[in-house]
Length: 113
Image (cartoon, rainbow, N blue to C red):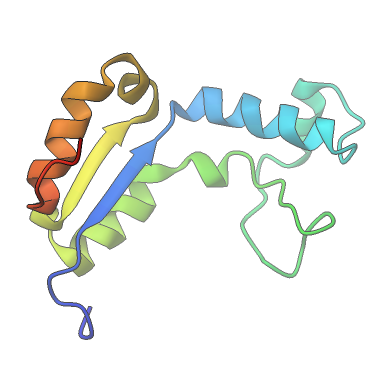
């Protein structure tokens, strides 16, 4: 933050449950999962993120990656709430023109046609 004191952050968070299901489906499509959803989640339920523990460069910290609150708290402490624009992933696609106007205002830029 010292190098960019006026930095702004845009956070787009997906519904945590939908994100976990999508994460599982994605790893399944890469042939990195061979367990049913419930067993896979139980197996990795307490897995914390550790870049050294991966599956061909991918991670199975399904639940850990959906704990947005912990990550957002750190960001607010570092940057301040006014520097963060928070959106829900699903809502952005339902009303993009509204979000586009909000984005232009947040970034204090001119709209582009």
